[in-house]
Image (cartoon, rainbow, N blue to C red; front, side, top):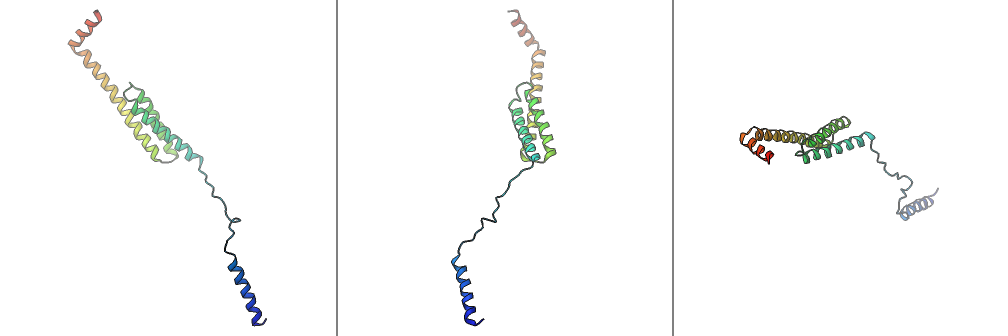
Length: 134
């Protein structure tokens, strides 16, 4: 092992490292795996159903009780979906369902009060009887 021989070995390893500018990472690369739990999908489905039912309950609030059916269904879906996890969609569905149910109940009470006011008014009774006699 003389000094000359040592230099040659060192120069050849440096030259080999300099000539290879690329790294081979293909053997160590693993694609990422994205998996969601089944419960989260179920809660998301219930949250979306709750939101749709809440929106339908608001839309059908003035259709004589149909909004109440959609509102109660939305509230039930939101409560069941809460057991699986919290979600912003579920909260929005719950709020829309409650608003739609309240609007439906208020609309039914309004219609009942209007009919009660119409049929208790003596002038309206005479008007209704005159139309019935025609």
